[in-house]
Amino acid sequence: MKLDRLIWGILLLFIGGVLLLENFGVIEFYWRNVWHFWPVFLIIAGVNILFNKNNSQTGSMISIAVLVLTLGFLFFKGQQEPDRNSWWSHKFKEDVDVTIDDNDNNDDNDNDTAFNELKLSEPFAAVDSAKKTILNISGGGISFNLDGETTDLIKADVKKRHGNFSLTKQNTDTATVLTFKMGDKKNKWNFGDGGNDVDFKLNKAPNWDILMKLGAGEADFDFEHYKVRTFRFDGGAASLDIKMGDLLPITDVIVKSGVADVKIKIPENSGCRIKTKTGLSAKDFEGFEKLSDGVYETSNYKTSTKKIFINLDGGLSNFEVSRY
Image (tube, rainbow, N blue to C red; front, side):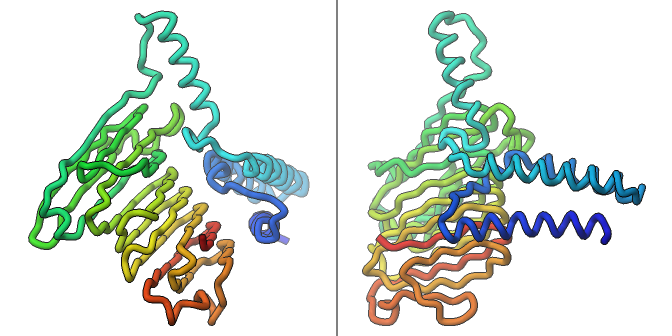
């Protein structure tokens, strides 16, 4: 058997085994922890290329041993619950604590390793409640959180260690368009010194369309008391945890991901339909009936006056939809 086929076979067995153990509740696996160590896959590929050309039994055994040890390490790390403040590395929180302590002892110390606080906001106008409000969010290496309501249209409290952030507002005849983005592309994927935290506060009056592009990072949004018409998420190696409300007759949730951990909570009295195109992804849709391949519905879907449509598209992700 060729070495490259054996390598791919072991990788698929590892992924399938982890997904199966997750589905049966034997383990809780955090794929985002694994992606922190993505360079090991380059090492595995390099070792495979090196020994595959030599076509020696000893080289093949070394290559397989490196792969097995690496997967064992990733299996161990994947079961460790990440810290919200820095799901890329538990070391970030420790670094921040040390930096703060050092600054308390010596005000003259260099503060480059600590985070900087930035507060951004846009005022609320009466016209905003008469039009839909579109919020575009983009960035990478960021932890997003919805932290309550505000009398402004939006507030963003940013704790940053790198990158430049901006919040802009534009008005059209039919919509108010807000754009929050991380503008420093040079440092967009610089995770070595920790990530950035963003806490949003939103006004409850408008109808919201929230469009989010997250290269890597996490988002935790509780929309139960907000009128969210559409939530669209496009992410890479990301963690998404959202809770939807039932203040509107129709709500659309669209998620496209590469390697992600996605958890969606919906109200029990809302009818919901899920359409999936999920490849090797794990799926857990508690309280749903499977109608056909990739289509699931709640029992009250046809009779409910409030409906939520969920579209899930992922390569290697964990999708969970539950009712509250």
